[in-house]
Length: 415
Image (cartoon, rainbow, N blue to C red; front, side, top):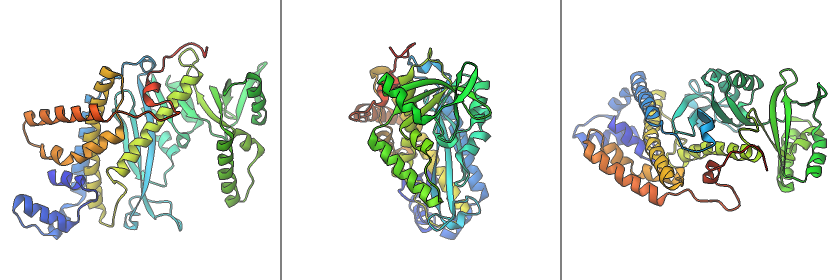
């Protein structure tokens, strides 16, 4: 087990020959690379996967302390979910299918991740073929939604029946609005489809960057939601349209006037009442979904999970879960220190800075396996001091940072 973690400390997986030399160096025993290769099999996958899942459960049980914040206390869990995908060697295609074609690999993996923003506990970690769409995962996991949850997801998981399920379970959601979905207003008891080409006139009347409407989405389901529209800058609009026209040209059609009109706005939907969170709060809280993008960025830039080379499936899968186990250990340390830091100083830590430092300390962490609690406690005190004093989250100019969003005071109106 320790050798698997030591391998995960490296920027890339060690070769079989390097593993053989390591065993001789650490144990004084000569083991051929062929003998090591035979040890990577279905049993090794099951072994490391079971350790990972057991530790994940243990970590989630430890990460139960919630942030003590006004708006967060409105929800049982605040779940953000997304997926990351990357290519694998073509020999993995029978296990993980890619998108194919001339520009992509025949094999690629998708990792579905969901975690609770309040505690840092991971509610879903799953690997699938990259060609399986996110919306299918949303369908398969909708039974995991619980009453009192707040769900933050991107458009890849958009599904009207999923929102209907959330309503039925008394869970809340904030989502971007799919531009293909019909939107209705109810006027004098009748449903009237909104013409987004006329929405600009409503903004001109109220002279505001935001417009909120009580609407219904879906031709058949007509799910009641709050629709929050935010005008985008002309430069952003032109950028969106260039991308849309380029995509449409490839597929042999033209961008419709209705679609073009919708590109002038960032559109959000929620089933939260205005009495719980006002317009600007909804917009700002949705930005927290980007925290999961930072996690994926760290996985790739700091832990190099997407740097792979050809090897047999059993070896690759065993090493994959070993690397994920190491990241999970670091994730637990980061979250514990982050929560303590925020409680004491009202400041947050940078996930990228912390995980990079913990990655550099990997050899010390794996070296403490089977050592006494005194050594482990000393290390944790030392690393807590380093993370909490040198790795503050930096504020980006012109943007509301995570600390400010965490500190949103919920109110009854926009006044």
